[in-house]
Image (cartoon, rainbow, N blue to C red; front, side):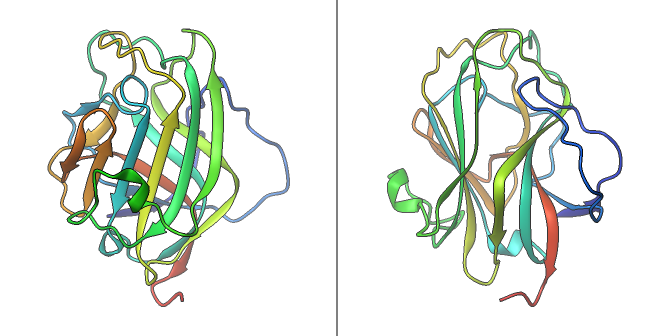
Amino acid sequence: MKVRKIIGVAAFISTFAVAAGAQRPVPDEVILPQADGRSGLCEPFDCSTRIQQVFDASTFSSSIRIEELELFNNFRQSAEGFVEPAHYQFFLSTTEASSETISADMDVNVGANARLVAEFTVSDFSTFFTGTLRIPLAAPFVYNRNAGNLLLEIRKDQTANFGDGTIYVDGNVQSPGVTLVSNQFGIRPSSGMTVGFVGQSLGPASR
């Protein structure tokens, strides 16, 4: 697991704007799994309309108050030119499902505290990003690693499975403690999108 302080400006998708306001403490960033430098995943900006990724509690060194999510496009794949037009919804929950027990029946993986934390619509083919796409949450989500594993779910209202042209996000296909599930490809153990969780660490003893 990688934890670091964020200093500087991230790359923003055109849907989002930087909000001005009072200064706050420099946030913590947890990135899981580390990108392997080779793998580009078609989820979520090319394929599948329902995607889940579980992160075992053991991959986190502490609980965290999550205020933003990040996806990455640092390792360019061929013919990348746009984010697939669709309405995107992001959910977080604490789940009993683990990287070894997560089910292809995606409804049973969702935790009792599931919440829609962010959504946006891409309406044309002009949206593109490199580096970091930061997605602010509507309200912070507190993940308590002592209560279970963390489930990220992404839903889209459509997909055309373009193949070439769309952004394939950075990921890792040999990462224990993480499993990716989609309605198109099923369960893929030890595979996942590289995701950044930005917010405030609550310490290893958080309850």
